[in-house]
Image (cartoon, rainbow, N blue to C red; front, side, top):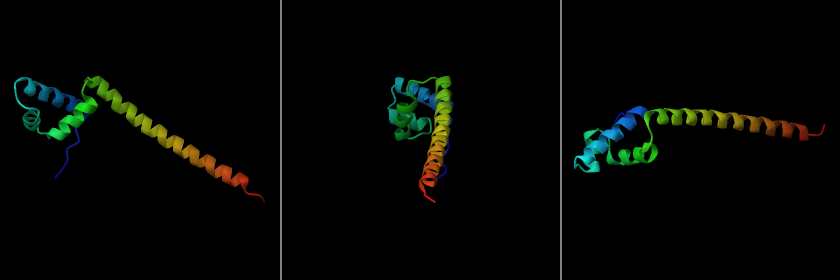
Length: 92
């Protein structure tokens, strides 16, 4: 089965649509199915994006990408430091 990757904006719109269905009297499971997602996916998305607006979700994803890049840079720098420390400790 092919998984579709939703953008944060699409996720927020789907969450709002499910909330509308629930307000009309449907259960969360029925509302999620009407929007084409599983109930489990709905609750996971709600936990992550529940109170966010579209612009906030975009900023969140941007910050997560930046954080990942910075973590990689720090890991590389630590590796370089360890290599230099090891090379400096060797006596000739």
